[in-house]
Image (cartoon, rainbow, N blue to C red):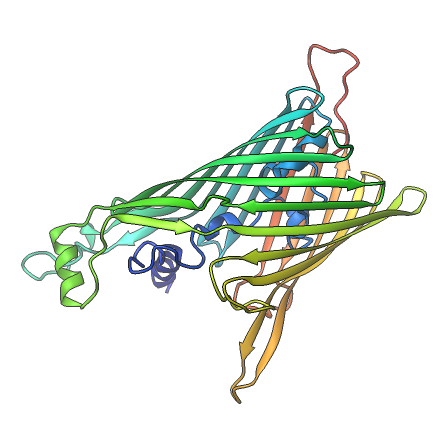
Length: 369
């Protein structure tokens, strides 16, 4: 069963690779939509307007301009499908001057040690388990970010140049390139607005395949189309958000944000299913004390499920989380998919954020993230 699960997960992970008839499939490069940082995931990814730390390089590069540290580092690890698939993130951000910041983000989503049984049966028809090898199906994202404050008070702009590498063992691999653009506007002390256009010029993945004669013969015998080298295009996605944050009593605060994902790749099974744009809302809430502790909750992943009587019902995915800060270190935790209302399994997500001070300045102290 474990091997079967690995194979099925690999097929899901690489389904876009073999969909050659449509070069603009839905969910292309979808591993870049999972999210980074347990703080954001605990709020159902509703952070485009309010994000202001190293994870801004992923969520909204315009938020990088508010990083106070000499260098800020973030990391996250999570696992999906009972540990079969692993998702990792590392981010580094550094202010260049008072008005601009640069960052680098690395993301990997992969399934390792997948059994390769293509040589299980030898030419004589005998089963030889020694011929079983393993391979990895992995997706990698490299994001290079730059953000700058604009002359307008409270306005920042940022962008990403991203390189994407995907491979399925030695059978298939692709390189892709794309651009993201983001803007952030702070209105007074309580309101923030943000917008991001991911894959603003569309992202192009050039696929190449290395299939053996035996694999090609198998494709032909099973009436499957033989994959051909070609392009896979990821269409732009627009995310807009608004955040309201206010103090309740002394250092106790409340922050809430709602984001709308506008997908331009056609009708999706989300709350508002229209073509060519589908709208997917998600909402997050955070209650905290200063920068020391925060409790989080969120609702997202709204989908219509068809019942046995052909009627439809709306399901959603609730998330919760907690974060604690001490000196220059912040540890966040998120628990996703409570009650398992969706088809995905629940996951525990941990992330770490560290702020480093300038070693050349004696009066420089890292902030509490």
